[in-house]
Length: 280
Ligand code: HEC
Image 1 (tube, protein in one colour):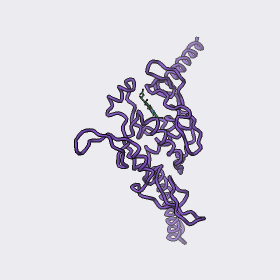
Image 2 (cartoon, rainbow, N blue to C red):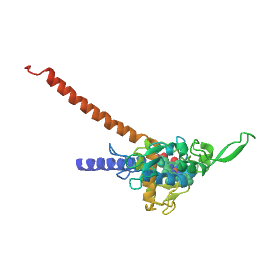
Image 3 (cartoon, rainbow, N blue to C red):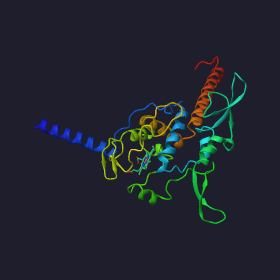
Image 4 (tube, rainbow, N blue to C red):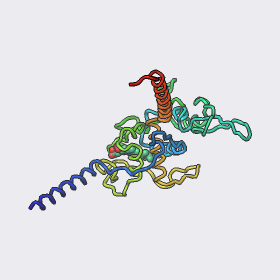
């Protein structure tokens, strides 16, 4: 009897666990992102490729309201431009992304890469002469172009679910960049009307169809053009956008720690000096 009760209890507990996993979503797959350690920094090449994936794929549905094009070229940004001296020729050469060491930062207004990214985008603005909506090329001061004019239009085009803004999505979701990476790789092909099955999504069914296909985004740096690589890169880019000052913060943390350790050493010496020869 007792055994039957405990078996039933175990079944109930296990059943709840399975149900809970379905509601919560499966735990994201582990991945050693370079930014996760206390002294880790962003893999800037991955952030650059991730921007490319966002721009070519995700920006058709998702806005990133917190970002302006100029942010891409500010210090710590993926397309920040530095002039670095070539030690063999002595000439100054442009370097995009964080240089190994040294380098003079070029103001974003003089950064041709960021200008090219912005001007390739078409922004619908108000024509200052006619007062009518008119298209113009983007400027570096523009915020990222929104794919839909408002949330209602966004939901109407996406089976009733508006695609969320992605500016801070890695902070807003449990599991952060790992969750985004796993979600993008986790589709199992089951479709039910406008809903798609994905075990990492809480509830299991979401309105976003698998957005990444192998080979869809051409890479110029020789990285593999696989769904896994795209998912990893775009998750890295979204982590950067949610926390663009992480590297400065960690650097400051190290300086503060070193300072406190030096100060502790000085206090110890002072203590020894003051109490020299005293017995206590
Ligand atoms: C065709 C439109 C479309 C494209 C392209 C698209 N998404 Fe989505 N996405 C959606 C919709 C719609 C939702 C809302 C799904 C829901 O709540 O059911 C969504 C939701 C999400 C979510 C939130 C899931 C959650 O936890 O709420 C993330 C993260 C996401 N998309 C990332 C991306 C990334 C990264 C890309 C580019 C690789 C991308 N999406 C491309 C339409 C799209």
